[in-house]
Amino acid sequence: MTASGPAGEFAGLVAVVTGGASGIGQAVARELAARGATVAVLDVKDTEFACDVTDDTTVRAAVAAVAERYGRIDVLVNNAGIGAQGAVDGNTDEEWLRVLDVNVVGIARVTRAALPHLRRSPHAAIVNTCSIAATAGLPQRAVYSASKGAVLALTRAMAADHIREGIRVNCVNPGTVDTPWIGRLLDAAADPAAERAALSARQPHGRLVTPEEVAAAVAYLAGPASGSTVGAELAVDGGMAALRLRPE
Ligand code: NAD
Image (cartoon, rainbow, N blue to C red):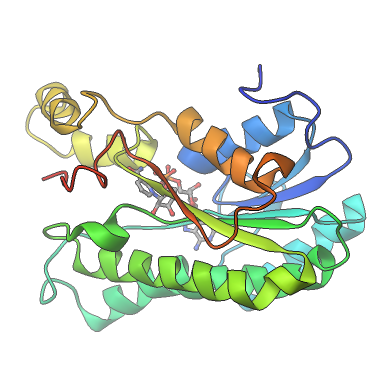
């Protein structure tokens, strides 16, 4: 594919992308590879580096396998995530803990395993996939919003802890992105095509965000062009957050 940014920008660097077998993560993996990175996808499915971010043993094994195979890790994209619908009383404890485990503690596990390698890189960067849900007050997304609020806070805390080690940490805040995740939600509607059209019309720019647009933002935050950007959140949402709108 053609990179949307400078070709060769990540030449010689190794990037780890969690949740890279689908949707946003897959687009990120392609974008970083097109810009010259060697990319290792960590995912529960369809990948060489099988890894469940809720299982510390598989996380450690996958990160160690990447480091052994490629000799270094320079970029970590913490993107694996799951959702859940419902108000605060709409999910069981098990559902709450599952979402928080994947979306929040998963970031801690993978980062913990990757940090010794990132510390040795002169180009170290971490990008977390957050969401407009972190701040928007979305209806019927209580646990998901709580998890992404935590990702936003965690991004800033990680940035503070690691910038003196030369590791930049930032996050992207996507709006509604056209991925298999959203596809599954639309497929559950009575008329998926009509629901897609309605959802698109509700976006400020009249369409869904593409995974490639999020990937370009991730690549920017992971690369040298953003060298002074630390602890930041980059919205890729068609204006949703800035206009104080929310997808219903
Ligand atoms: P997706 O379902 O298409 O892809 C998610 C990937 O994560 C899958 O490949 C899945 O196998 C993997 N994954 C899930 N649980 C995992 C686990 N425990 N360990 C390892 N891998 C796991 O979803 P997507 O839409 O591409 O979402 C990716 C990220 O973007 C998520 O963090 C999500 O919260 C965030 N996000 C998505 C949207 C959207 O509208 N699609 C909006 C804002 C933020």
